[in-house]
Length: 115
Length: 113
Image (cartoon, rainbow over all chains, first blue to last red; front, side, top):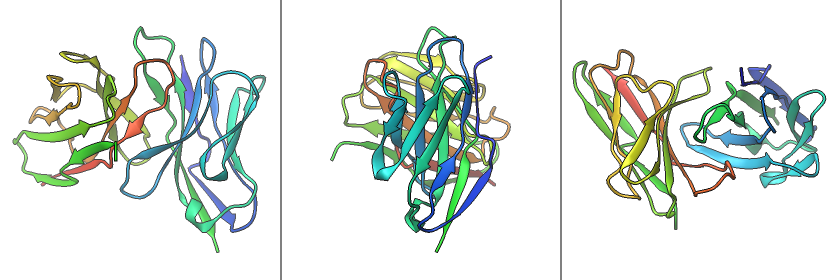
């Protein structure tokens, strides 16, 4: 079965430190992977995606993600965290099992950046 | 500016009442989606539509209905048959193609009293 796992419900990081939000996946075909961010009581915003090519993908707000095929992971990273990065982060993968397009979502990771 | 507009942002309903959540987009996107978000569960797909006058059930369609009479509009009705309707509802759209990038509205929070 195709799935996405975000193993940490919450990640706490001090401002200025590097941050990592973890995501692992299981898919039957080529993985199309995505990260979205959600601020409180708001909709989701697209951060970045991996379709093919370079394993290091750069996205919005200084975020990047590293695709690791052998570990089936797509961790989100940022070299220096800001308090404004505090939000809920979702990893998603394209569902290849159905005949129509769908995303499979992780449960989300709450990122808290402390001043 | 182009985007997706959901209304109302907050809605209270008594048990047994149907309610309709509005979703309008001016991005000229072909595909539109409705998701339900509950704490700790991520997003679950209710319905989606890839073209006008056509839509498909998602993972949790029971107790919900939709229509797609216009390209820019995809309203969701939460019926009295939905056993646990209190949730945050998100509408999204995407252009035709396989990019996987969804554009989301700001959401509608429905509370059943």
